[in-house]
Amino acid sequence: MVERLKGKKILVTGGAGFIGSNLSEYFLEANSVRCLDNLSTGHFHNIEHLSERDGFEFLKKDIIDFESCLAATVDIDVVFHQAALGSVPRSIKQPLKTNASNITGFLNILEASRQNGVKRFIYAASSSTYGDSYSSPKVEEEIGSPLSPYAVTKYVNELYAGVYAKLYDLEIIGLRYFNVFGRRQDPEGAYAAVIPKFIDLLLKGTSPTINGDGEQTRDFTHIDNVILANELSAITTRTEALNTVYNVACGSSVTLNSLFEEVRSILGKNDPGIENIEVTYGPERIGDIRSSLASIDKAKNNLDYQPVVQFKEGLSRSVGYYMDLLKVD
Image (spheres, rainbow, N blue to C red):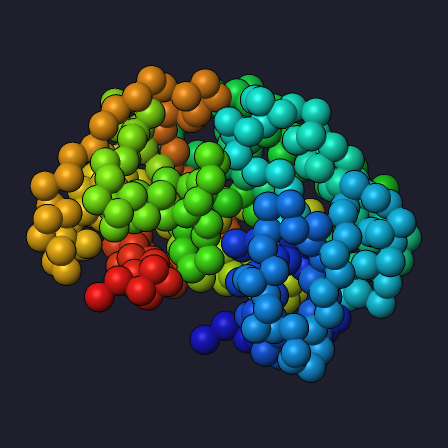
């Protein structure tokens, strides 16, 4: 059992989003939580159940505005920075908006944290930083060239974090998330993640589309592993664990074809008709990474990180969550 973070004043940016709302809920059990979100991609219903609880505060603010960041970081002990404009395809269509949120917004919250004396700053980095690197598994110190504006922004975050750690004596940890999935991940919209999208479409009797041949691999990481990595980053007292980045993953990967088959098999136990639905294939997406498998040795050694939910168990939990959400018998 991991020692819990207790008695701290916490800021979660992007706190009404998928990952942020899960962090807000988890840390509110033993801390006070300030949640900042402009609700552009997050949803208030993700945190509505927290809004009446003692110690919870919601700020509808945008990290692009520096004054909002200054106000949000007052009296905060630990920042968990999750706010960003996600999605590789969206960044290709909207590079300026992606840059404003992910680079200007990141620098705003980082500088505001410095000015208000926040000591520990933990931020969501991304596996997209590995870009065109062919090495496998992905090791933190070996990256390639970015393949999308989104990847550029997440790499710039790491550069800024490194500079701030050296210049201003901040304790900063970046967590390179690999394909996070689980409860509250939005299945709707053009930029929905693949797992909730597959589940949603199959429950509706519709054939999902895979871009490419489906043999691209992903290291899918359940939300509970992400929560664990954030908590470990907040409580570590090891000097060598600070001011660096870590892969947050399971250290195993599956193809998208295998993912589809797994989801179809689980859902087919309740509705045999789903077993007859086949996947369709579309053109490859520009900016996509072909193969993604993480080494998690660095996080194991420095943070004592060990995945608590493996892929198949997480997938089963996710299917159950969406079936309950959609009131499927």
